[in-house]
Image 1 (cartoon, one colour):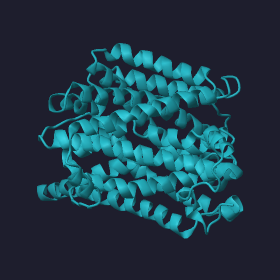
Image 2 (cartoon, helix red, strand yellow; image 1 turned 180 degrees about the horizontal axis):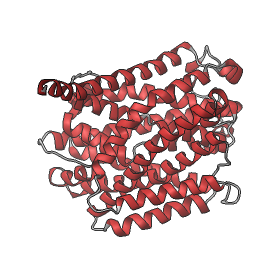
Image 3 (cartoon, helix red, strand yellow; image 1 turned 180 degrees about the vertical axis):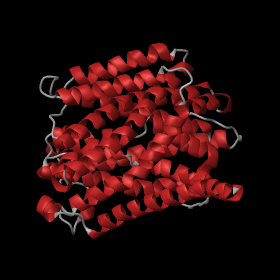
Image 4 (cartoon, one colour; image 1 turned 135 degrees about the vertical axis):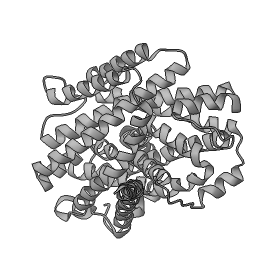
Length: 432
């Protein structure tokens, strides 16, 4: 049993390596890897690229503490799904009431709309590098995403998502092609660097917000429930979560190395992930630039499936409506109409001339980071409820990491807000 005293059993290999265990793991594989890797979406790639282009290797140290926090947070929500058989929105509604759930859903819906728009912005930007107009790419990709989710079964959708995860190998390849000094890279990865200006703090919040986005907890828990994973199978799901989180950070790390060792070193300024792909061409070569751009397209299309899907999942769960990819419009009308509406709005907004795509993409990640503490507080309270979780409650180490993440995000957000607000306040006072 997974109890509150043995939180780190998941770091040990499964007790017995056998063909049966391998087959069970392969059958359960999916929710953890998909959820973590889709987080390297258009908004994520933009945030990581901008962070590395602006601050170079000095920002790499963030990835180690972020990995620890990501594993703990995703493990908690996957465990709740396996033990309770319910999604996170369901548990919030049952424990905190409909009113609280309604306001949480509104906040998350608005946040995720920005995230969904950023995915289609990524599709448009990446394919424009290959000479394909957004007026062709965005509608076609929107139709593909809609058909995949609405007409496909959960098993088909999951297999497509798992294949999409393989394409992220493009970023480590691009990083090695950039030829960085790996000694300097490794030293920077373990040497914390701090700055007090609001731009740096916003970057830190953006990195955490895009790596541990609020939608991830809702989607992963829903995916665990829909796949029918139980507490008895949880050792395998735990491994799925850890592998997924480590792979996601691995990809993000190399993405940042590629930009830091080229764009930052040459003092170039970029505004989007597509700019990063174009900037790599004269610095490293056409192949690295193409790999980066193709990775951006894959990640954006991947995210364009998951973000609207996760939004439809948690709103329907929170409101007590039927949800699930294996259902149809008759069985779960609210679920599929929400998914459809989000796809349509996101795609249409991208087709508006001169839409501020970069602002939408980056700010959505900062908002993710600002909303995250509130979601984590609900999760911590739920997972420590013995009536709900029994012997599967958190141990002290997991609680410490979770609360530290909450406090850190609140402090960073407050400092950033004050740093941005005080100059304006002083300017007003001096005008009197």
